[in-house]
Length: 243
Image 1: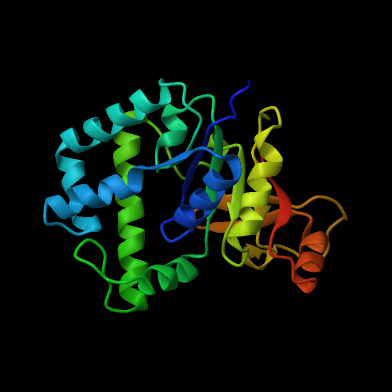
Image 2 (image 1 turned 90 degrees about the horizontal axis):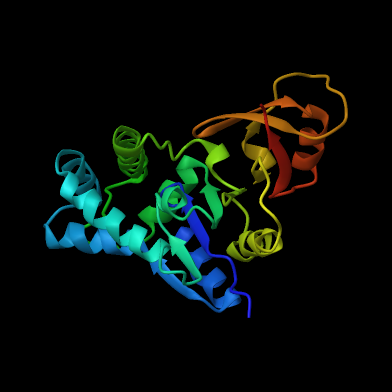
């Protein structure tokens, strides 16, 4: 019996990784591992918020060493899994690597709607936006410093999906579609056309090509197709990253 390919999910804070990974594990019939849940428990054990624990981890590399050794051991076990983790794409070399992107304000509204606890709580939408951005940048700098790995570089992944308006079931369907396909050199991207900035009034027909500088997307080709997707109310439109 051929084992299903492991799927690892990374993405923006508040991007829906938990919901998508739970649904995906059920669809594939494999175990789900959440490094984020482990990280939250460690933060609680230290009496810190998620942001405070991120900043603590920048100064104390034992935190990352412990988590990274755990991910390395899981990756080499051979078990087929769904892994929800910021850095699993770096350790699980043969996995299908999925990255979820989300509009920052939408992400902040989502986390603001969760029950507050000692690890994660926000006073208002502006506070949530600022703290999520600070946590994400803290992680990015830490991973860059220790591994030379930039989690915001979309070419690290096989599939990029925008969860701003798309339902979790739609995201899972896209992952399942790609799950049995051979890996490609460039990521497959499904983005919300409402989030992509149009750069000109005229453009030839054809595929939409975008540039990314987190968290923004700008169309460099395909503006006509992009406008049509927006008018049609599409939530996930295929696009290609610019070279």
